[in-house]
Each structure stands twice: as C-alpha cells, then as structure tokens.
Length: 125
Image (cartoon, rainbow, N blue to C red; front, side, top):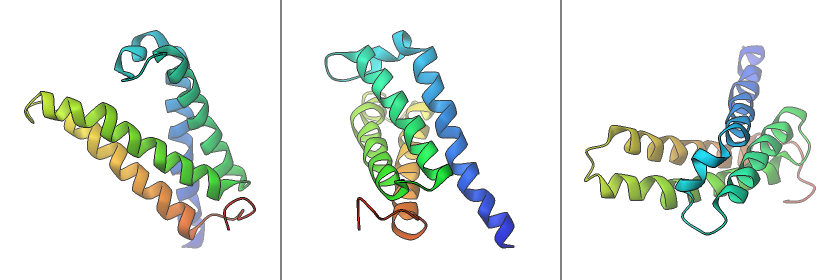
C-alpha cells in the first residue's frame, strides 16, 4: 500500500509542471488576469514557481519551503484572481467558482505536504 501512496507525490507534482509550462506557452493570454502591473512578467514568474515547486517535491530537496510558498501563491491566486470572478458573476459562472475552489484546495494540500510529508527541513525547520 505504501507504494501506491508513494505515487501521490508524483500525481500532485507533475500537474504543476504542466501548469507552469502553460504559463510560458500562454503568457500573453494570461497576462490580462493579473491584477497588478507587469502582467506578462508575473505570468512567467509564477510559471517558473509552479515548475520549481514541482521539482522540489519530486526530488525531495527544499520541498518544505517549496510547498509552503506554493500554497501561499495558490491562495493569493484564489483570492485575487478567482474570487473576484466569482463575485463579479454573482456566483453564476461555474468556471470561476471551480477555479477558486481548485486553487484553495491545492493550497491546502501544499501546506499539508509541507507539514507532514516534506523531507528537507533545511530552510524551514
């Protein structure tokens, strides 16, 4: 059973690599969603952050820091990008609500990983 549970690390990490690559492939399109100036640069930086967090999870180096920061980034996305979409649609846009819930859930999972599964406590004890 531990072998099956061990797959969880990869099932969690690999989609973040894909999300990160999407940020690089669609930076111009995503830039309009960024609620602060410098949209395209932020898209590239957050794409890189997705990939870095995933790599830290897979290799087990700096994974506590990586998942703690990933959780923070995802919660910021949920509150600053997706929640306004939910509010502006009056709750009528299921895509906006799904994205809000997805990022909130993934942030919680990142923090659970940091608190219970992370191997490298070098930066955050």
